[in-house]
Length: 112
Image (cartoon, rainbow, N blue to C red; front, side, top):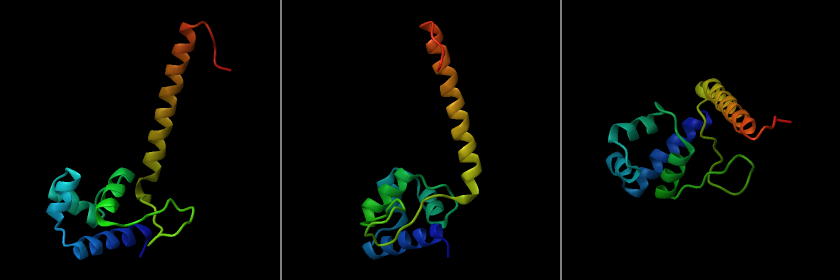
């Protein structure tokens, strides 16, 4: 079982222990029941913010991988999407550099 599967299993178990239905969890997150179901099944990317909201509702502590006392140390990353996520970050950085160049040109300066 990989980290993502273990995290999702912990979420399912804790939700059931607390007596929450998937519909109730979805309502707390402001999403549809089917969207929440997809989260628990690992069929959708799990954003860190959403993971934190779920953890808060269920009383689960996750750490960022640097250690510390916690129930379970897990990383909310879907390995299948790392390549596309990194490419998006690169595109965002390129856009920011272009905008910075434009601003500096307005002031008659160049990037160092």
